[in-house]
Image 1 (cartoon, rainbow, N blue to C red):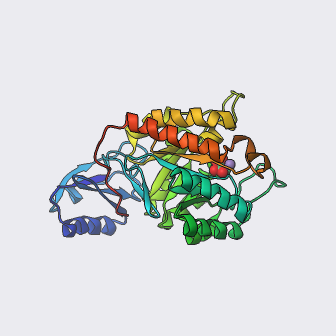
Image 2 (image 1 turned 30 degrees about the vertical axis):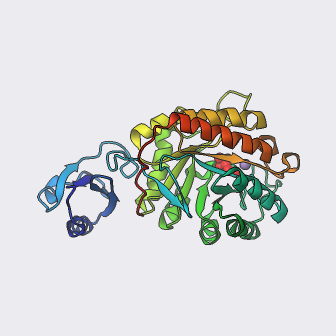
Length: 345
Ligand code: PEP
Ligand code: MN
């Protein structure tokens, strides 16, 4: 059930509703919006009698939820959410670019990539210290040493750090050194990990699973939010299909599909989505054209020497060109409008 508060409802009235929800043994999730606050209720098995709430001061309406998700839903928060990451934001109407190598390999490699990423104008840096590799014999990442290098990137370049965690210990470490915790495609349905991520207060970049449906992606985000972390950004990174001309098939139609159902921002990963250097720029532009809130792109100072995903890495020169083009396209397509409200959570 969703409780919609009157626009003029006070925080005492919101607290009054939360108290009843708690007494019933459920959990209330307050979602302040541009025009009104709504409260989502989770933890209930069946439907809740609206009579508990409808006459409480400040309550405008109670809405029974018929969809499988509540907190990600437009019904709870009609306007788009924008999520603060470090000193910047994703989902405020601007185009957010996250770029950097697939894996942290050495300080020299990371600083060269960071130079290129910040030089082009991007605000977010990526790089994995924990790598989910198909083969156990492939490079697994530098671990905490790698996170320390990323923290140094933030100090030197002012870039906000987005980096993957694969287990609970990894989440604790990324919380310490990074600005945004990436949950990779292979862990999208690791429900224990999603719950743990929901208990942190760092924003989560949640990548779509290798063969996940839209509902499965949204429910994975719901797992995180149900634990109280409302700062979730979705990411389309390609799915597995019969097509073999690309590493994965970019499913760009998921962007408008997400928009129709959810207030969460969604970004596009044309690097894992295609697997090929020459496809990254065209699919990045396509992602902007379908209205993504941003891009995550792999950039390596020397792709031919990359320890991981070299075939899809673009060079600093190519990144500069991509950055200029995607920004120009975004500007052309975006009507001058008010930036979305920044989530207070
Ligand atoms: C990555 O971003 O480096 C990565 C491993 O992505 P994905 O989980 O989408 O494969
Ligand atoms: Mn990669």
